[in-house]
Image 1: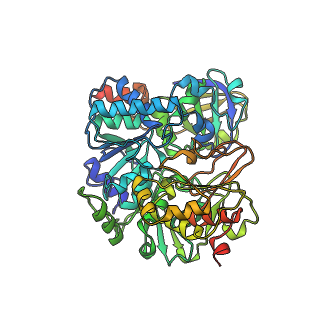
Image 2: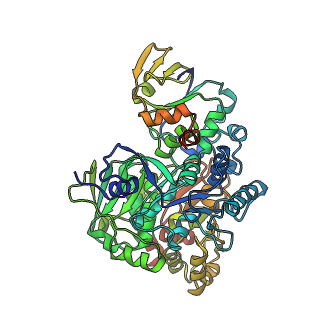
Image 3: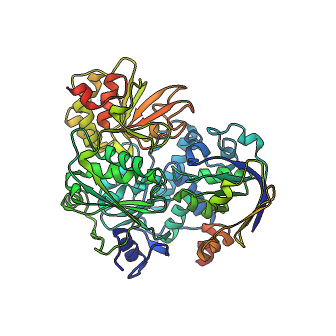
Length: 162
Length: 421
């Protein structure tokens, strides 16, 4: 799996409340959620995000609530992949379970700017910043997680197993 | 190599003699929890793969508490979906308005979770049950759906951090001050992916309500779970609340911890977390003059009977400041009934507070206490992120019920000692 896109970058501790505020949680419709993604952090996100863009964040990305609506909103807004220094635990699980690719790479985050063109190669564990020309090695997912992703998410994975 | 409490519970539930940190396991769950925000998403996933029945009708708890009593048509539709699913599947533990409570206060109170259990919940504060010596952790809706089908969850065995509690807490210092102090020390990602294990002689000074509050906020340090050593206090609570079989797991003397902290409870002062992260903590006496507009006393963190009693002790014979709205929300019907019996509501109403039926409403900015632009609240809840309780330019300060009640009277954030002298 290979994703190439323009970077939208934020800082540390991007919490689920700003990814999708609780006032919109009376629906679980992905399209509706995407309309309000990042609204409390950056009002311009929804208008500038394009299909395939890559979201870059600092430490503890997705901290806070267990709401799966957060990765759902990010995915539905067109983001192809999230790269961060670290992810909050529940967000990490949720992203894998719904099939939103996520990668931890602190060095890449430090050296990547908003607007850069990034290529994330999940199979080989490599990220290339085409704007700066730099290349980064990332850790590949454990086999079990790769199986979930290949199945298209956790529910399909357990269905296949049954 | 020895194992921590968490490792032992995970080993038992995954059918292993030993599990090491980093291992991926599939573990059997004793309870799966969902609320009116997360369960509807799980139910849709459950139905999408054509599942026809749940793994066990007695091991699933569905608690509509976030937008309930329903604030609008959309939230009513979400609960309706959940209610219909519970009926269709024969799920025993669905709690309608009038029996329900804030989920993490309700489940222990009803004895649905107990020592040695493995509990997952589609709510981040599911880590609360670690107070009982259980492994409990928050997950998302898809995890919940999968567990409702299979009765199992995939988990990575966490590394552990040991918190050795010593000393006796001083006056006005409760579980909330202790956990805010700890998060202030280690940061909101200080325990990322890890287990926080609480032990030490200081435990004897902590009530169960203190421990529920501390375990509840383990997630605010990024932890996978928080867990307390089981002692006589725990066993007494279990005997009074649960008829379920339980098992006590004790950490081995050679269990491995990636870090250890000694926390002297006698040195902790009443503590407040300033906007916009739970790690921005400071002793209440050092924050200067901060006028406030609203106080909320309640939530899964601090809506239990002890919290109500301490708030009443401070509000008795006093009035809420004219510039402040004070909202009090007992976390469950039982806490409500107990407040009524003890005359606490008389005190609250005399003081000028508003008392609500159980709900998570204001804590997550759902309803029943939303903040306008520029407004400031002191809340006994667990998060003070940007826009948490309303307008993106409002502010939430996290504090204990004692500090919150005292602040309601003073009209600014103060220590209880400041008004009780």
